[in-house]
Image 1 (cartoon, rainbow, N blue to C red):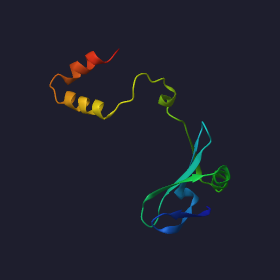
Image 2: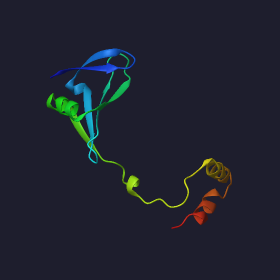
Image 3: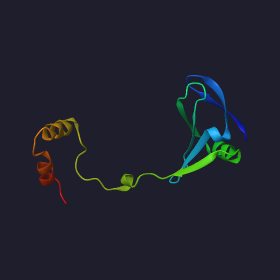
Image 4: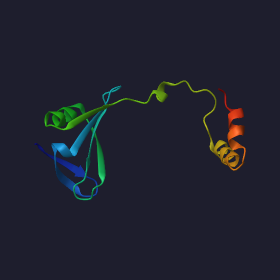
Length: 109
């Protein structure tokens, strides 16, 4: 098992094994990162990783996880974005006893 030296922003340099680290790569754009739990403070540390670092970590035995962008990012959105007033209106609606019926009447489908 390989020994990997990484850095925690609170604790500085730490030593890990390949089992302590996970590499994540996005299927859409190949953006990579790695994460680990700091052995000193237990904080979860996530760092961006260039392709050469991803390859080095994976060949050292680090587990590779491929993730996908959410489908919602490709959805077509109509209308104005939600603003502060919309949130206040929604909060006021939730205070009413008939909020669910009113909400159903306001939304299509």
